[in-house]
Amino acid sequence: MRLSKFADELPVPPVLQPRWKDPFHTYYEVNMTEFKQSLHRELNDTTVWGFEGSYPGPTIEATSGERVFIQWINRLPDKHLLPVDRTVHGAHGNVPEVRTVVHVHGASVEWESDGYPEAWFTRGFQQTGPFFRKPIYRYDNTDRACTLWYHDHALGITRLNVYAGLAGFYLIRDHRERRLNLPSGKYEIPLMIQDKTFKEDGSLYYPEQPEKPVPGLETSIVPEFFGNTILVNGKVWPYLKVEPRKYRFRLLNASNARFYRLKLDSGQLFYQIGTDGGFMPHPIGVREITLAPAERADVIIDFANLAGKKITMTNDAPAPFPAGDPPDEHTGTVMQFRVSLPLSGVDTSVIPAVLLPLPKINEGSAVKIRYLTLNDRQDPYGREWMLLDNKPWDAPVTETPKLGSTEIWCLINLTGDTHPIHLHLIDFQILDRRDFDAERFKKEGVIRYTGPPIPPEPQERGWKDTVRANPNQVTRIIMRFGPYTGLYVWHCHILEHEDYEMMRPYLVIR
Ligand code: C2O
Ligand code: CU
Image (cartoon, rainbow, N blue to C red):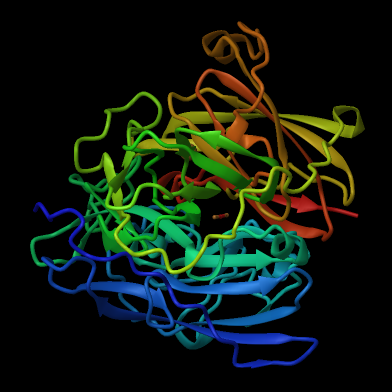
């Protein structure tokens, strides 16, 4: 089915209102429900899952230091919207089919509120996973101003829950940001980019495996899912009418597996001001921005002097990344900006020359260096099975950093794909990437570098929580663990990999 491009206006998710708020606490209740929503004017309304009746979910805005409590409530049906897979970890036997748990991606959170994959709960908290601790989560928002997002994280079913619509923005603001005089209010817009495939009747398509490895069992785990249609904020190929002035956009790749390499067909620059974890020291002008699943970029686009123009945001990232097919004209198109609104006032916002200093974590302060492989294996049914450090999810915890200590993790990618590796709790800095002989490593277990260390790309020189670990490279990241102890996870953010079993627990100990 081919839908026309730029037929619908970009929706901006509403900002969530708290149930109550006093000087010390803010309390939200957020219901997850199933409903129908129009994703394109030529398409029948699509049954989706969302938060508070909205897909994407409403944007949660917090101030740095604000103490926020959220009750995430599952009011979803007992039957999933999409084909489940009972052969995947966490989905075996008699666990309930529909399980949810919400993680605020990039936030520094006590572990009991972090959305541990086995802390899932069902409708009305009737059943809960073995690590469920409490129904109301607490967020201290100790982070600096940054672009975070929340999404489902239930073990073995995250790919389906997020694809069904369970994702939204979570923005933290602070006083330094306010002083920067960036474009704000209606000139600051979050953009959640996803890919989906629709059936003729407008419903969401997610593959079922052609052959059933276990007779009578539904299976749907695929190596990666790529949709043939691009959506921004839940609309297919939307357009946005803008004034000839500066706008700030929070770009988020919330796709299951697709990477994007975004460009503006006018050839103009994005002024990137922030990474996953907040502001960069200085803005950088870039012509393209690569975003793996879960990565964010905070950018300013200046439409001044472009009145009357239409500018398309395009994508030329191959799928799978980096060695797959280039996108076609459909998946190569993201959205359109129409500079068709009159300037409503003088644009006094700025692209500040200086944003926020980035204290570099000193390599010498690391007390531990971990070498961790990314592996490509086959499961007992002959399906692709990606692992971290050759260990399944259930193997005993092996990464146990000490509270307050600094570590370097060397991600040794032995597969043919780039994997966006995400650690919960902390932000890290990328030290470098370095080519090595992967074949030799597989045979002898030793790293032989074949090139010099490559510094992170300009767009990655800031606080990160997700890093692209490329094939045939060792990617080094450095971080300090804290401020909480407890059980967290690290994983690949390609959701089909995370669900099967490219995810490991890690424990911050005292
Ligand atoms: Cu965006 Cu562990 O998640
Ligand atoms: Cu992966």
